[in-house]
Length: 313
Ligand SMILES: [Zn+2]
Image (cartoon, rainbow, N blue to C red; front, side, top):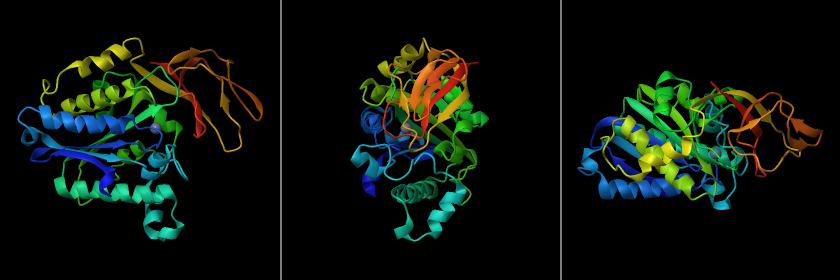
């Protein structure tokens, strides 16, 4: 169980509990490396040390068997299962009937509940770190609450609205209903997912690190000037040519057996035209239903969404 905890910091003075999930998808390790680096930096350079950190930071690895295998998931996508109904089923079922991801979910929940009992925070902030198979864009997805949107805008990366309407059972959906709450804590739960760039791009690690520090400052865990450095500029520079806010227009869902193959060369936020030949599957060419910007075109074997189309707002 302890190999799941990447690190803990703070907890001596009142403040929010910031809970970071990294590697919810087993082929996305940049967030884990970023968090290891972050704890080292916090221990070395936090002004006033750990005692001066308001609230607590806890970072967890998501899907351990999938991380070991270096693939997105073993049995099911761990970022499409977070519903109160499914958790209830897991808690009722015998171990033998549980999928690999069900077991991961049960362990994660236990650690989250443990942290909530320990810190009893008024506010819980979930930061879910991801990377994409395509190159070309970082972005933030807020849970559908005003406070989450405010937090998302604070990170200097394009905010994508409505993405959660296109999928079900993500960790962010779970935060919207404050479903982690136990024993009356937290009173409020904010959630954002940060997409740090391409899976294997070393710069994705630094971008995840930058997203974390920005979140910690905006949550008041550490002063604005703490750990200031090149990380502040990383997101600014990278996102300067990307749209500030976009909204989901379309999701191309894929099912097993579709034989979905994205045509090569698409990058996140690349403009596409209506009718553009984007991919092929068992039924023939897959064409764009509308004009817009393509997001998360699928360039890996496993995944349930072929691509998303967003528009600038
Ligand atoms: Zn992911």
